[in-house]
Amino acid sequence: MARLTQAIKNLTRLTSLSTRVLADIPFQATAFVQRPPSYTVPAFSVSAGIAGYFGGGYTTVAISGIDKITFSGDTRTTLSAPLSVAKFATAGMANSSVAGYFGGGGDGIGGVFSSIDKVTFPADTLTVLSPTLTSARSTLAGMANSGVAGYFGGGFDGAAALNGIDKITFPADTKTTLSATLTQLNYTLGGMANSGVAGYFGGGLGASAYSGIDKITFPADTKTILSATLTANIYNIAAMANSGVAGYFGGGDDGAATSRIDKITFPADTKTTLSATLSTARDRLASMAQKAVAGYFGGGNDGARISAIDKITFPADTRTTLSATLASARQQFSAMADSGTL
Image (tube, rainbow, N blue to C red; front, side, top):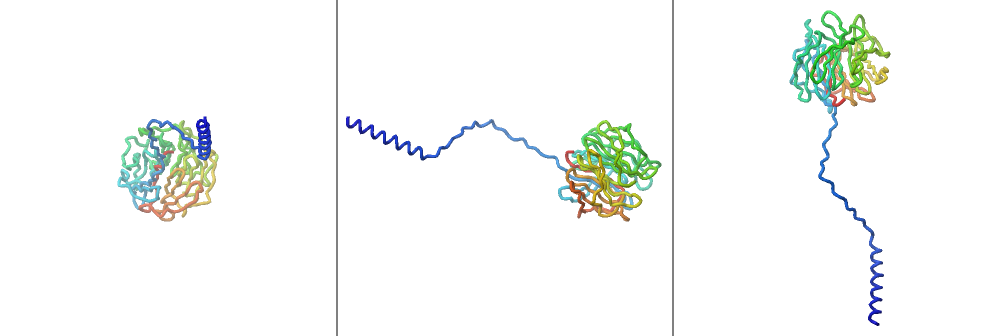
């Protein structure tokens, strides 16, 4: 009996000790997670703007070169593939991330063209479309509903101003002519677009200089006239757009060359004039833009042909001038951009 009593006492002390030891050990939960089947997260990318292109123009003769401004560093190179012929007073537009187009133009010695050159991104190879503009013309304007179609409006056929609008439908690059026309016979105008919504043709020269802005609403391609107008009757103007936000008409001749930049804010289509101006008053310039980043106005004539490129940074609309310049001073040329997904 004595030994049984002692065994019970020993067991009691052991139980008490075990309880104290366990109480002093922090509790650690262990989670048991079932491992899912093997899964690889797919790669994704955001299509960003790549480069803008300035094509053709007039120095002392018509030229065929295409200068490329790479947006990442605003550096300039000249494509190995030039336009199919030397020409000036063309119009440019782009199916962004796919290809850019230069349409129409003149040869500087009385000839005009109906051909459309295509620069395919990213290799920058040049081909000539089998469809042509409805008639040969120069000093026309271009804009595009990226992914759907590009438009060439107005121009001068060597004898008279035009008001027709040709449509190049992507990706087959077929040409049709809109039933809608510009409000007036018009050349030396500017064109830009709020891709997916509407394109705009502004300014220009017909019977007289013009301040009106025609709006082509996608996809029906109906034409209306904005109640807002450019600051002055003006021609030899350039236009570009920060698609989804605003379009800009810069430079031109309103009785003299100007450095003014008018801004059309989407979707209300209200007009304001930037406090920033081009670095010099100029006309016969060209422009293009990288969506959400900046627009570029290049070349033109400010009393002499120039090679400078001014940059308007969005959204503050501040102006700087690139250290890179066009390969040669020029006027009466056009531009378009691979601005990524619009």
